[in-house]
Amino acid sequence: MSTQNPVFIPGPTNIPDEIRKACDIPTLDHRSPAFARIFKPAIAGVRRVLGMDQGEVIVIPSTGTGGWEAAVTNTLSPGDTVLTARFGMFSHRWIDLCQRHGLNVQVIETEWGMGAPVAEIAAALSADTAHSIKAVLVTHNETATGVRSDIAGVRAGLDAAAHPAMLFVDGVSSIGSMPFDMAGWGVDIAVAGSQKGFMLPAGLAILGVSPKALNAMENATLPRTFFDFRDMLKSYATGGYPYTPPVGLIAGLAKAIELLEEEGLEHVYARHHRLAEATRRAVGAWGMTPCAATPELYSDTVTAVVVPQGCNGTDLVQLAASKYGVAFGVGLGEVAGKVFRIGHLGMLSDVMLLSGLATAEMCMADLDWNVQLGSGVAAAQEYLRNSADVALAQA
Ligand code: PLP
Image (cartoon, rainbow, N blue to C red; front, top):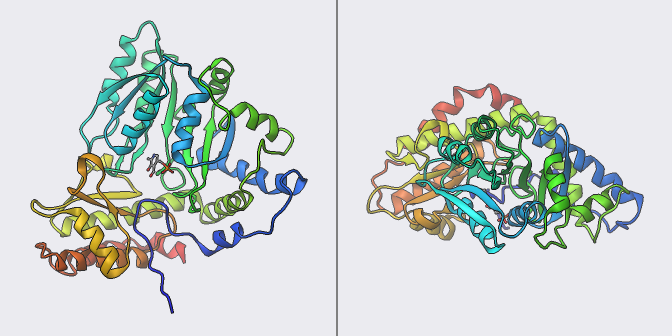
């Protein structure tokens, strides 16, 4: 018999059986009305999860990285200036992608563990009286450090400066798990991936695009073919797709939306917050801290745990995989070895989370870290049993 443990990486997530089954459909003709019957509800559902009131949803066979590329190439031209901040591996990779596309990237270097520097972004926008900045790029949830950024604050900076730049937000590890308000925050492009809050396998880049970004698309000259929104929208208008779509994944996306809405998005967010808080209680009981510098920065989908001096987070991740068959996330880039990451997003219950925390503790004991077996689990249990109202709704 083979057994399957849950994963505690910050995406791909554990996949509900209903979604796995929804993906497993017989081949159908994607040029027939049968495809539109699957695609339309998926698109409509994404609009609700993103909090869109206008604009278009684009779904591309790709991943979050492809979503970044689609956002940039559809709206910008070589040499255009974009403003962004680097505070983790994923904000870094988006910067790298922009630079490789010949954009002029104005980077605000920010300590890892901090979020998007709202005041500095506002100051840079105010200083740009010529309006040479075409877009502001923000990573909503920096998965490398477990940091949530204040997108409303960035929007306020744009508005205060009366700056016309577009606002692009990477919500790959937040959308579907943490509140996201595309309309309220005035986001011009939101990027998500199928393998995080939507609980699907990797394979879809999912984007919300505002009318302003759609306008920019008409004059943008960066090369794009596979990612061209114009081809997508032309085909969508007739219920089709510009090339062969991954129908199974799209069927899974429709099911994912159904499950999220059955639970209720507010409940989904509350469940993630509660599991994240339980994780943080465990981290505190271990005598450790999250990498996120202050509580308002805490992510509800991933906690990067700063390990004690002399310990290596990667050792824990490797041991958990080899000895217990459980996956945690390694530290990336500047925080490699200094943290290990506990993903707590997607299909996850109290009981599943406790098993992960218990496994992490066993690894700490195995590695002779100065941690009392059961201490983190007890702190999480105490929190979970006393905040069980949401847990009951899960049942
Ligand atoms: N942005 C964030 C915040 C991520 O966490 C990831 C992946 O983990 C990406 C972008 C890149 O997405 P993908 O690996 O799906 O290309």
